[in-house]
Image 1: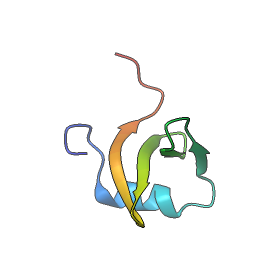
Image 2: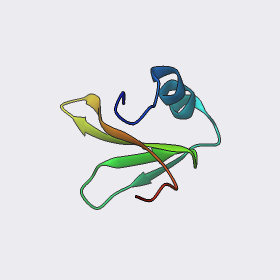
Image 3: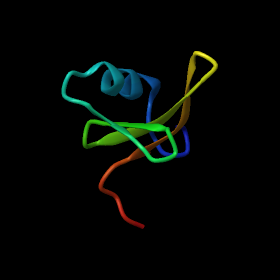
Image 4: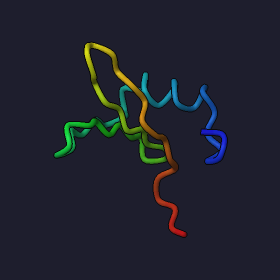
Length: 60
């Protein structure tokens, strides 16, 4: 998160927003995005882990 310039507050806001979308991926991970930032989550033994976060729409 630090490397990508995303704060914990931004992550929490995105996760709590009713405007965010969740997509189940083929690898059974969950991508949640609000169009600005995205998080990849994985459920394991009843615990939801944040795998990575990144800014959407940026190339390079």
